[in-house]
Image (cartoon, rainbow, N blue to C red; front, side, top):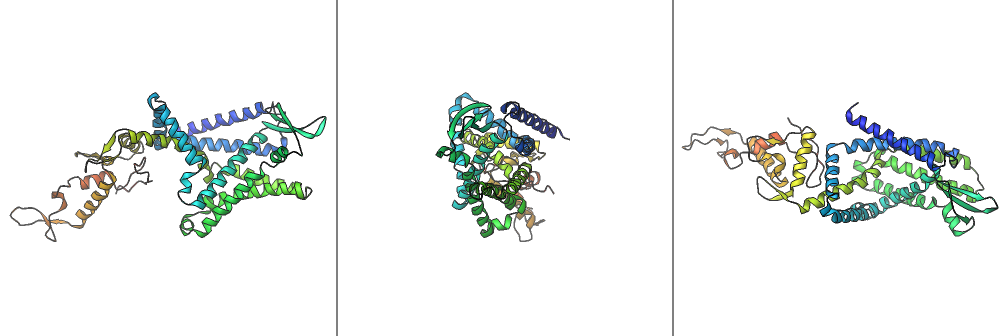
Length: 399
């Protein structure tokens, strides 16, 4: 096991142990813990262990670690503290609360994502305290028509069962379930009708999460319908079916697509990083002399590439490193290098003695681009890590 995996596992064990201890303390030594929910509790502990371990591994990746390191340094800097707090709050409101980044890709897609996200968050906020025994409802001993709320074993306000407040409280999971069902239908509609989505989608990554969310919401709504309108008919079967869907989803959560729910808030660090980069000194292309990205970004990108084992230095050249060339010039150099390979040089008996190709033209090496093959051989046509244009790249073959 690698050092990174050992750290991640240790972190997961600590977090899971802390949560288990909080369950015991919050339920007053399990006095307020419902034994019927013990399966949910153990599934939740497993999910927390898996999510923490995967999250810790993700944070140790060189690109992610660099973003977090720089974002921490920028946020804690007194000179820009107020501005960075404003950037984080603004991005949190726009991208997280209102899902602006999804609405940019399509209105119906944004509505589907917003319904699913908020339905899941509201449902988790309600069920987690109930499952862990942190919140409990009990009837009053002297008045069975009233319920009293206990939070961490401490008595809170009481309310009539037949009141509007009581109706909302006892049906609080119905509303997020309806949101999730609506969002799932919109998402499935898009995946069945959008040719672009259909060409790229996979069952395990795209349909399985929607099926699980729909199964949880639908079985939960059927439980409500059973005790409200059907006098409890099929309630036990529905309760078992609902438990199976919930537990399976919790066990699958650290390994599936829904893990991105926990990664998304971390992207606020990227917002701080980019905002600071726009205000700082810019890197200048070593070929055309134009600024193309922040100097901090390029320096960090070079460091990350070295940590990942990629060496894009250009030895014996003023360029020094492939990352000091802007994307536009990279495309130009790539074309020039291809043209050089396409037009092989042959000796020429002209008075100047310069080599020409089979069409009588002088090779590109003598026309002001001496670094073209060197940059492409050492740097390749692609790179990984932090990209100044926000695009995702994969390592190019070094052959």
